Length: 156
Image (cartoon, rainbow, N blue to C red):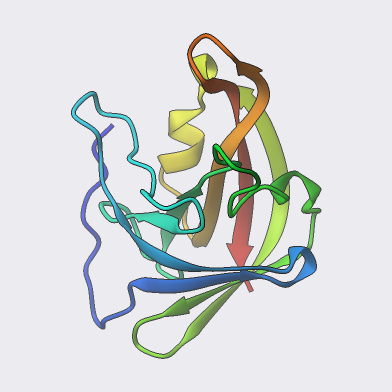
């Protein structure tokens, strides 16, 4: 799915994410796509990646942030994401000094084979946010989780 590049009026790329209820705080960098068309993930376990070809947090559209669930040595940045609840707050600091505040609408766990591309990346008429990490059972043969956890939120 091709996502058009939104018009940029300021240097409002995301730089930091906070989820107060989970005590999660981490730097945000840019990620793109792998050669197979899947979303890249951050190289560091504690970092969060913003899908740079989509909207920036606070712009109209669904901004997508991705982070690891765990690592080879223990929990990673989104390890507690499954504990987030409807109405919990997510704050995204932007390079222009502003902060976009989001309220959680819902959480969804889906099989990676049935990932809801249109729902995650599709057109919306307000600023929204998607947080994505791994979930479900861990496949010891492939060393990957079978599901994704997706948090849907809107700007407040």
